Image 1: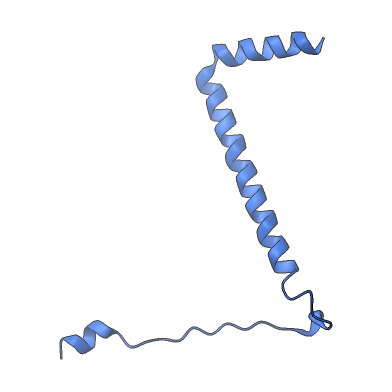
Image 2: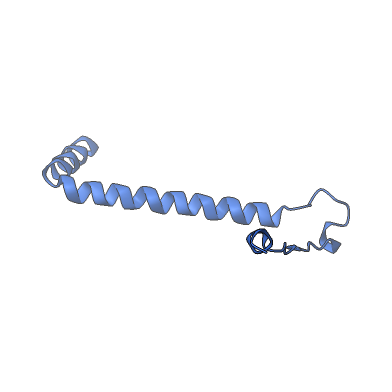
Length: 75
């Protein structure tokens, strides 16, 4: 029975190559996005989790602004 289903599926894919390619491409992109989101969430949730008081740790960001070099060159 499964052999028959596979045969019909392959015939349909062979007959509609463009449609099958679009579906496979969309499925692969969606799978890559899901894996990326999972890995990003996993990294954020396990950041500094090896510390004894991990729930009391806070992370801050600071971006330093440097003066524009091109304005100093033309003075």
